[in-house]
Image 1 (cartoon, each protein chain N blue to C red):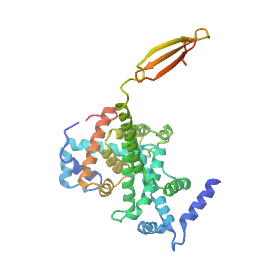
Image 2: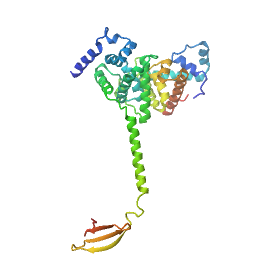
Image 3: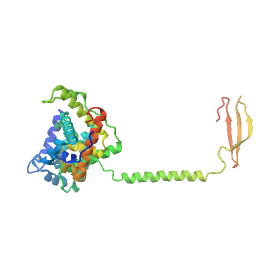
Image 4: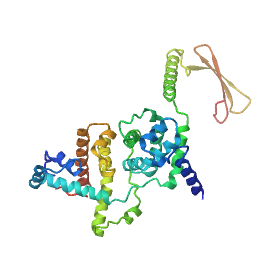
Length: 210
Length: 152
């Protein structure tokens, strides 16, 4: 009941506040412009739009839902404070993911976390692949989980490159903007990340040394 | 593992959809066992990642709570002076340390414990006595010794 009321208030807040068209139909650049003038509902629409991009990257990086939730909120708080400085050279999504990547790296530096997998066993049971046989599916799923564990053996820069490409599906160009480096560096980091990951998987015994 | 081939960066660009597979690279992959194995590793890795359960998301129902946290953070006064306070704390700690060191260096040469017993008096209470201790700086300390050896 409370959720329903809150949702209604949320929807009412985000749909319109004196805007000629509903905010959900407004382009990012216009929302940013509104937000720069102090229009909080426009900023909320941006949060609504990109929350899962931010949360996804944080989660892939930290592998902990609660921490990813907190980091995601911090990212948007930081974005709100810095939005006046956003020049629009990159898209809002790239900009917010850059803030996310930096926040995640800071988080690791400060905490020097030894992450542990928080994937619930139930998720493994829920796993179903439409094409693979149950054995193949299980083997692939095990490898997937091992890959996530092996990610912790990578340096922060290599980890970020791998997560952005393989888990978030970012292009090299967007990666270079998020990682604030050249395309050549992106390719180099990604290549080294893959090589190190392969080595870790061989050491873990989940992949053969060919 | 085989020795990595110099074509692997190019190969990864193609695999990541950033470049097309030219005829030259295609024929190279056919001939190079290192590149073949690398492609196999890339495919295996990607398939395994794609097979993983979908990452968690912030559902619409969670949005009010998510937005509330952001709103609280935005409207919280920024700790603008945290750096100054940290610096002030450091300066205060340094001052305390300096004062402590100064007091140690300028303390009287005679240590507090350098007392000698001058006189001992017995009392009406059985087992209780009074010791008068003299210090080098001409002060005296009086100790009352109780029967159970507790000094008062």
